[in-house]
Length: 236
Image (cartoon, rainbow, N blue to C red; front, side, top):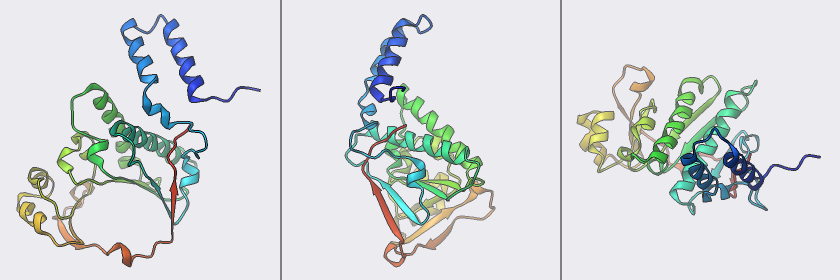
């Protein structure tokens, strides 16, 4: 019987192979080993926790909430990347359409920050590839995503530019973003728009219509069938 693959056994196998390999430059070996000892990997294979698996979370009529409040920003990014990779594989490679999936990523400015650090740049580039895949193939697979933030100007443009539809509720301190994505005539309007109302720009979808203001129903007025929450652990 084969031994069960765990994070620890996988880590040790990779480190051993990296140290032996003549194909990995010596300057990269240390970086690979440090990455494999990253605290982000502690999110995987936690004893007593259910792993986050796509088929278990995608139940029709239910919302699954992944609470990452207690994680640091690097760990939150690891979770975001894991979810995008998992759902991308599940939805894009499934022979059947199955349930609709709408993935909502809150605090997007923390998950996809601006910055020139190499690790962040590589991370954002990988995220952008997956979101681009959702944009171009997701409709056919009944798969979409929403990025939510109070600081839209702080999201890496490589990611934010992939959002076809922009929705702005009352917002201040983002004049440049509003001017670029809605128009300069909306800069002051966005600052004073009433609670529950928003301005939507669907130009990215190909619709040749100007931004429009609409009323959003209060969440207490919407019947929610069920909620489903999970303790946080991620697994293969």
